[in-house]
Image (cartoon, rainbow, N blue to C red; front, side, top):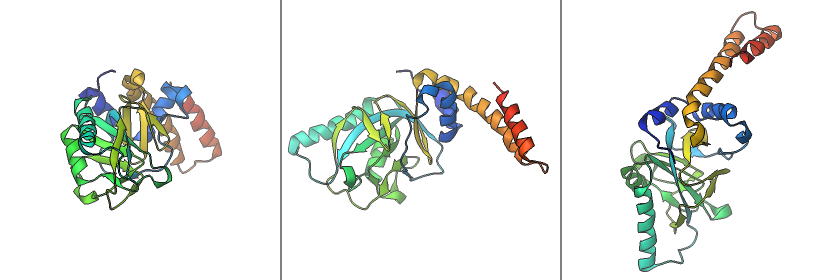
Length: 234
C-alpha cells in the first residue's frame, strides 16, 4: 500500500468529492460506474474539509445482544481498537451494519467513540448505521451515516479488517477514501498522484462552457461552439 503523505492528502483535499469522481472518469474510465456511494448518507458536518484517509473496515449489529459475552467480548473489542490504532493514518472507518432492513437500530457512533477514534488518528466514519450525540462529537471528526438515532441498543462489533459494502460502495482495508457532504469515493492508489492534473483539466473545460453561458448573446450556437472549444482541451 502506498503511503498517504501529508502533501498528497492536502492536494486531494483541495477538491470536493464530485470533482474527484470526474477526475477518475478520465483516469480509470473502466471504473466509471462503481467505487462510490450510490445511496444517500447524512453528513454530520458538511462544513469540514473533505475527508481523505485510509480505510479501516468493520461490521456491526445492534438489534440483539452479541452471542459473545464476558472475556471473549472484551477481547474482540480490544482487538478492534488495536486494529484501528495500528493501521495506516490518518484513517477512516467504513462500517457496515449487518441488521439489514433494521440497520441503524442502535448507534456505534457518538461522543465517546468519536473522541476515542479521533485520538487514534482516525478522522471519520462512513456507515450505513446510525449516529447520535451530534453536538458532542469530537472536533474535526466527520461522520457520514444512514440516519440519526438516540440509542446504542445492543450495538457491538462483529468483525473487522474484511471487505464491506456501505451505501453501495465496496471497500477493502487499505483503500484510499475521499468523502464530503456529497458522499464518498475510492481513489485507486495507482492514480492518486494524477488526480490533481485531471481535475484541473476538467475545470478548464467546464470554465469555457460556464463562461459562455453567462454572456448576453448566449444561445444554442454559442453553446455548441463552447462544447467544441471545451473538447479541444487535453
